[in-house]
Image 1 (cartoon, rainbow over the protein chains, first blue to last red):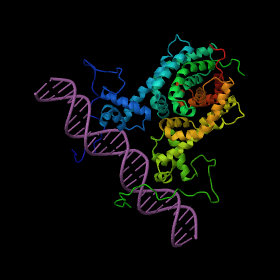
Image 2: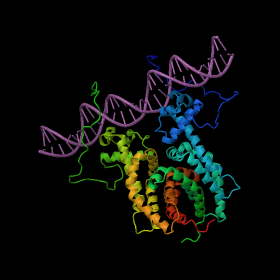
Image 3: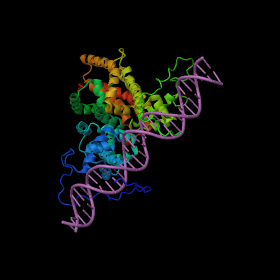
Length: 243
Length: 243
DNA sequence: GTTTTTTTTAATCATTTGATTAAAATGTTT
DNA sequence: AAACATTTTAATCAAATGATTAAAAAAAAC
């Protein structure tokens, strides 16, 4: 131990190890993405990713220490670099998965052509409220990432929502033509996701200001599954009889 | 220079210097909070605070380096500690100022008893949209702070919005009694600030998804000064003739 | 059962980063 | 201008932190 001097001028670059095991191509794989969400009985790689997702999502990139991830995962610090090369690489991975997960709920309900816009809204809001109830700190994480690292996400946004988006705008344009809708698509989207997501993002401040408990909050969110679509519907037809 | 060894066991605590100069109590003070928002011709203390506010608000506490603050302020790194003791103290200061600034716009318009609820909403939304147009990254900063450091803010929230809040709930309760309003105060607040603030918080993602330019975005926000109060008004009277 | 490969561990490195210090520069008082 | 106080600077420290390495342990291959 303690060998006087480690090869000094040598660039650390190029790790010898190849690109991770070939994996699979065998016979009996034990547990691959089964139900077990916990860290028990998961591969080291999964343990690290789960711990990383938890901490990164909760505290952001800069405030998360690799040592904390290792401890949370119950593994040796070096394994983090062994499996993922660097903190940044690990973060990128987790981030992309978070992001995809978040957008999927939004996009999946837009593509069904047999639904009316109203029904689509009902489904999206409902799915999102359930989703956000389960992963409450995902939206703030994503807002931060997009705000601070636009470039890295830009590609994935277009890749993920690109097709859906054009479809949606098409639908909205059609509705507008028929005179059913008179609202800029931007306002529509902003209101839809604002009314749905914002209460979760601002839960801490809203709770303090309104004095609402956790249980009451959840009840209110469930209530919103009906309210938000109703409000959106009202918004779509402004020239009723007002003013 | 280079004095072999700096007093080793001495606790660094207690800085000798008193609690900063007494300040003022003189004759001719040059520029105190005048118009000059820039860093030119400002006191060292102000320069640091401005730079800190900019970087902290933009990147958060953990991602901001004291050296970056010093460089942005154009001062020696040691001056940061000389004037503010620690990065944390400086952050707390800036954070509290940001927070107060943010809540003021909300509270100030609630207290006027001569206004109807509708007029209050119009004023609040309008004031906030102007405010947010000027300080776009304030809301995300605040959401992060409240989410990650609830305790530190809790006190200030109650101090700042406490009286206003009770007044508002009183008003809303009264309106409810009169049958003018049938909406949980929580929903009301969530919608009001969600519809107003969320577009700014999610500006980057909204712009990518909708393809809206900066100019168009600002125009849409101006449009919202009229739209949001209108929508809020509609929401307050749900049992019209629907369903 | 031996060899070979993969995984895990403990120790250590190099850099970054918040903070401090002693001295120099600047300003103020008398 | 001398004496004192305040502000600024350059150098340095100590701790934290991301990353690497060599060897041990475990697993797989033969």
